[in-house]
Amino acid sequence: MTGPDPTDAPSNAPVTLLIADDDEVTRSGLRTLLAVQPGITVVGEASDGVDAVDQAQRLRPDVVLMDVRMPRRNGIEATRQLLAESAAPPKVVVITTFENDGYVTAALSAGASGFVLKRLPVRQIAEAVRVAAAGEAILFPAALRRMVSARPLDSAEALPRAALTVREEEVLRSMATGQSNPEIAESLRVSLETVKTHVGNVLTKLGAQNRTHAVVIAYESGLVVPGLAG
Image (cartoon, rainbow, N blue to C red; front, side, top):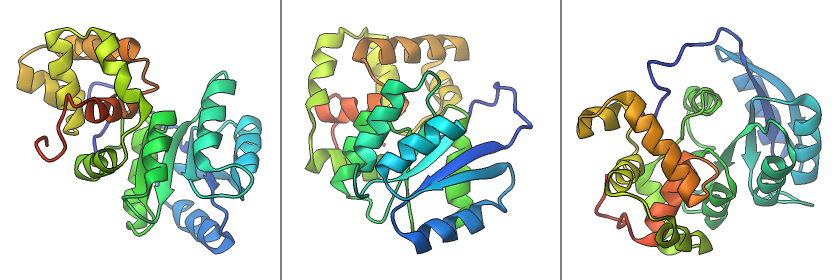
């Protein structure tokens, strides 16, 4: 999991969080545990995807912790709708039971910033929420490789059309291993601002919702081969 750039100024404001899960016990447990984590304020709960969109548009949280298998509207469609219809959409972190869940890869392609497993310690889930709020990707490269390798998606076609430069491809490969911008700058021996420019160009050219979506495209397209990177 990558973290926010050390050059970014920290904010003292707590991260506001909406929890969406159709299981009341899971939802209540997450709320109780996350509400006492430093820097996080839980502002609401949602029991399905329709409720998640409605609550997110009303409460305007920084992050939505989104289960994927929910009634009425699943987390994939809820994520896609939030990003399409919200003027300032929240970051979405998918929370799932199984890391090889095919729904997770689809949610990442829909624009989710990353995913966490329900079995993780609450402090790690809380850190994922804070990282997403800071605008960084939540990447588990090994798990992501396995998912994409098993279930390729249509966005693979985005890379051949993108006409990335050689340097942009290098940056994308580095992103796919979970490297942060400062780590990419160090490994490529360029400035942090240069890396940020390249990352922005990659996202624009790929039509990627965010850093994680760009990495999914890299694996799906074959630019990064599962099992050989990271």
